Image 1 (cartoon, one colour):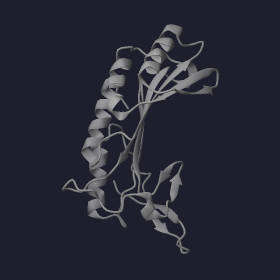
Image 2 (spheres, rainbow, N blue to C red):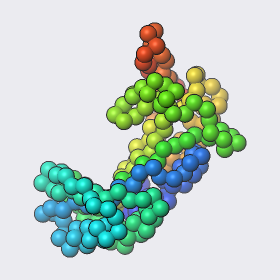
Image 3 (tube, one colour):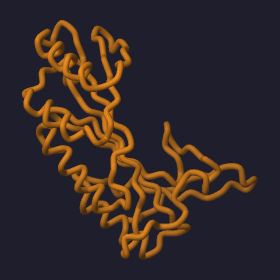
Image 4 (cartoon, rainbow, N blue to C red):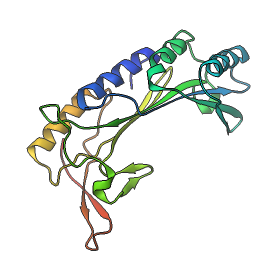
Length: 208
């Protein structure tokens, strides 16, 4: 994404979700702080003290030479946490581990038709719970973003159509026009049940 900082990134991502999803609320929010030799101690300790005062006990892990602390953030507290980190910019870098403070946000997208009604057959229960990637399932559309000084976003789409219909193309084009990064036209697949009916096979299609 071409955004800079926390406030702008959340604004454009939330605007995208508002446009394409019946449910615009984030599903999961996690703030992460990295500490190590490259990170000024006053920065790490300041953000960690703020998180300790506002959120439940963090989980901790190692990221190479760095220590990572992560706090679950209630979605209602996300704007305030975004403001807090925006005020602490510029965010220092923790070497190869990236920026020393980031917020990981996941939205479950409930795709809507032209009348803003949920399109039927969204949910992995309609597709045998079939995983077509790591923690990615047929029937579930997801946006995941790592928001920081620079932001990255990953969009996984599961359009609930049996073929590439005009409606499917219009929805794909709407998504492309609102997503704040370029969507490739080369990574679309249509998934069909196997002959045994116990899984799916994907083949490339043109939709954009």
